[in-house]
Length: 174
Image (cartoon, rainbow, N blue to C red; front, side, top):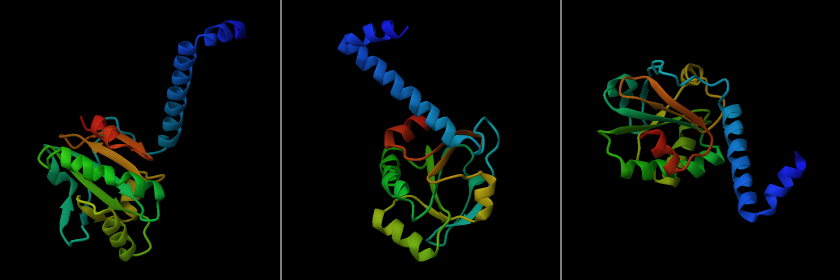
């Protein structure tokens, strides 16, 4: 078998294809491992919440039935969150609030000032809500950033943990 594998790799295009397949498989396994233990996104109703934003407005997830919602959990100290959060601004520009509502929920923060500084540094254009331990439990958050897509019926449609590009978020939210 090894000889066949070695012979296949002699052609540089075959070698590139094999390497690409191996990388994709490794990423899929890593994604599965990261997501295990988090809340399943298989059509169950998303846990509802009523949270206040940094601006003092109150938001309830169930008020947004009829449109898709991206719920992005982050921590101000998280470097990956800092790298991926600007992609939410790009997604906001690409999709109207009538089609896709985006919420960022601050978790695991030391102070409101730390959350405010994070938001100001990144010039975030989406509502930033102040989360509590209950959302960590309800959504089984194991790491940051974690995000869930809630469909128009209020059901969990997909989930992910870790960095995601704007394109990755667009694909998950149609």
